[in-house]
Image (cartoon, rainbow over all chains, first blue to last red; front, side):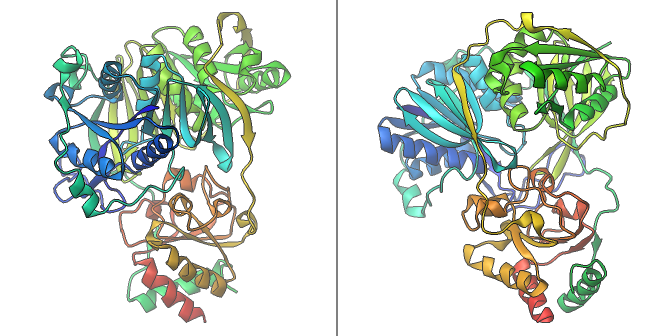
Length: 262
Length: 319
């Protein structure tokens, strides 16, 4: 099976405190730790496991700049066979639809049976996989937490409300967005990264993909971020101050009053 | 004047809470708009769902087809692509169905798409200003949506409080307009979540751990605090993903809905999916080393500390 995994380089929210620049144009990016989007990492692992079971190859692709190469190499160190970088000044400022159009053009240059994305990334929109499938006219399933290859089809589970699982049969080729927890992504050590450090990663631009200037990027975006802001919050939590011991004493008192401690 | 449609989620013939929330959101987009509910399904449960929708919307479009008996996103999208008029705004709940169905529909309708909207500031010409969150709720953003060729918008559950307004709407049968509903994805069945050996939904006090627990070995630190408090250990999604605790202990929209008296959120950032699983207004205590963690916005009491130091200290104090 020929599998393409779409990945994105994002600020790691588990490692960073996100703060907004004074003028609201962006978040403070100077000291951010970037990594591969967590959902995408599960998608890559799933692709590798499927390939190891039924054969074929795994290609990882990202729309980004030269800095995004590092996440492609990281996914190749996990076991992906190839990496492709989609980079062009014309891609900057694309909305979800623009990103999906760029990926669609790359997919149509190849011959893939299965395209995986993470269920969502740093902007929380969870949109690119579904848009991509619609553009390709392929079937789609989101929030996938189980994949079994059965003949020329897949049997998949989708995570739905309440921790229940919706089982579906889906034809190939298809696009699936992968939910966290579907597998246990393998650890990548520094030695693994070194092994793929010199592998060439092709970079494709708008011209290579036959994408008309102006059909993607900021000019084509129907959804534009106006600013980042800090909302006026309600009263929020009463923050307990003092030493650790003082905080605990105050909390125990409060919990006793609320029936949380006998 | 915008033409606005609302997709109505329903189960066993009863419309979900989102039906009333979308009606409020539609008014925030354009108070003068004509708003139509679209209800898809099959048979008698569809009819009762339409009656429920007619109590909230002046117009209800019913789409009855055996292929729509279960809300398979692939099938519903096909029907809506035929039924929703070009140029209109469609509202959909941002739940596991909406996330599945809606992005692709925006492509089929050649409409703008904005997901997981938490606030709406109204239309200015064809531009709709909305509020979203990024970076796991740690940053808010205003977005400008060009609705000139229509828009598909998913709205975060719970973000638009129903205003109690009622309607006595009329139901129009649009089943004939749905067209061919064959799809390349076939719904098989729903597998119910396994019940674990501990029922967190019955606990009065929960010590709930998130990413801040850092390692599987540290779960015992939370268990010791829970034991000292007479509480039960629950957790957020990343802990289950990492397989450090079983799924039955997960609080959230994709886990269990709990109604404790006291909820101790230990090293939990507080995503909306997690908070969606906490009902009954418990007294929420948040301990997190990140003072900007969204959990502090909803907690009653907050303590900025590393839980790996805080929990053993509290256990000792209680011992």
